[in-house]
Amino acid sequence: MGVVTDGFYKDYKKVNIEKNKIYTVNIEDMSDEGLGIGHIDGMAVFVKDTAPGDEAEVRIVKVKKNLCFGRLERIITPSSFRVEPFCPIAKQCGGCTLQHISYEKELEIKKNRVLNCFSRIGGIEEPEKYFEDVYGMKSPYHYRNKMQFPVGVRNDTSKGAFSCQTNTVLGFYAGRTHSLIPITSCKIGHGVNKAVISAVTKWADKCKISVYNEETGEGILRHVLTRVGYATGELMVCIVVNTKNVPELDKLVAQLSKEIDKYRAGGNNVKLKSVVMNINKERTNRILGDKTVLINGRDHIVDYIGDVKFQISAQSFYQVNPKQTEKLYSKALEYADLSGEEIVWDMYSGIGTISLFLAQNAKKVYGVEIVAQAIEDAKINAEINDITNVEFFVGKAEEVVPVWMENRIGEYDSNSSKLHKGVDVVVVDPPRKGCDEKLLETIVTMSPKRMVYVSCDPATLARDLKYLLANGFKLEKFAVYDQFSRTMHCETVALLTKG
Ligand code: SAH
Image (tube, rainbow, N blue to C red):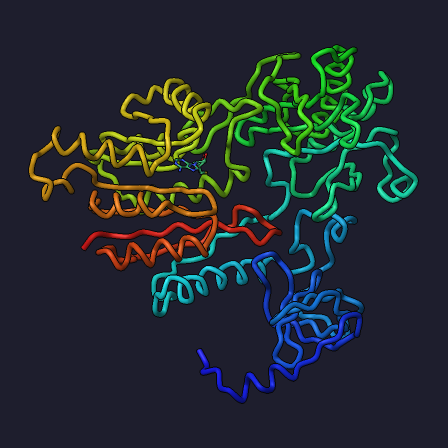
């Protein structure tokens, strides 16, 4: 890192970037939010829809103390990494921010983001030494097994552009707003969504099902949620409604069956197994309410990750990219290096996906998760797989694990210095904010032989690694997985050992 001199600051202060003025900017990098980053006289400028390597005319829209934001006016010289966006609403939709960049470059951006965090935040020297690979998808489309579409009414601006034939429309919100962009299909969701969108909108039109209005709180249909088991082809359609008295539900099932049969006739192995209705009467941004009612079939679908079977209901948390999840979990299992004799902790266990994966090769797996319903699902999933060597706890990992440890000291050995014999492997898979420091402290005292850290945010992973490396752990290796293709998000799995 360069030394910032007084001279630099003097020059820097002279930078006078004017709002609304157009500047020529060379885009050098990508921000964590998927904005291109360039510089004007040393000041960083963030520009949506640009790619590293672009030379562009940029209109400044916002100037802050030491950075500014611009809007792309014109590309002067396009980056060699540019590709044609695959979706007609790429610019409006708040979804895939990297559509205009080649997939190869996307993987490189993700890899570099992790490496940067490791050196900048984690203080790890030459992180490349520990880097195994970045694992992308063969085809980064149609990977999402879960979609949630808000419902709206077609207006004049949406008429021709997206060829919606119906008055009721499903779509996505434009970035950072609640204005609905109607769609007829989505390139990152399963292909069957096209049939579902068509069926639900036709049904709503024909049966005069009103559309929920966020401002007045009136109207019935709020959202449509779909889930597909990629290994089984099982489909769930869940309509989210504002009342339990929805008319003509039999016609909804008939319309769905008809459109999905048509889709199947094209050689697609999708079966409509579950139609449910979730009731959400709250005036809130939360999509799902607490109550789900069965309309037709089962209240859940079944899917597999590897050999492990999962029951997934409308409300269950489940990884959205099943193909990549299987690869990621296989790597976590490889890093855990289990022989069948180990005591393992899976912290932030969700519905037990990693726990059950590990349990097949461990003596005993303990899981802890804050959401009680997820633990209910985890127990069902253990049962339907005949896995008996797992035990799940509901609560905050940072509260449950220390108490478990204290009890364990008495149970195993009064001499706490031998405690490491208690737990062999710890796996953590926290949400974006990373692990609680209290939990990290506990893991240090647990002193497992190996720790596998699965992370969806490289910045908090790097912060936690810094703590763990300062407290006796050693980084062995890590790999990056593209779970969320065409967006800036990625997963990292790291192996640490205790000397
Ligand atoms: N390992 C699971 C879930 C990972 S997502 C899987 O792969 O499917 C992170 C999980 O951590 C979520 O299920 C969330 O509910 C849970 N969580 C968040 N804060 C927590 C805490 N303090 N203690 C335990 N679990 C927590």
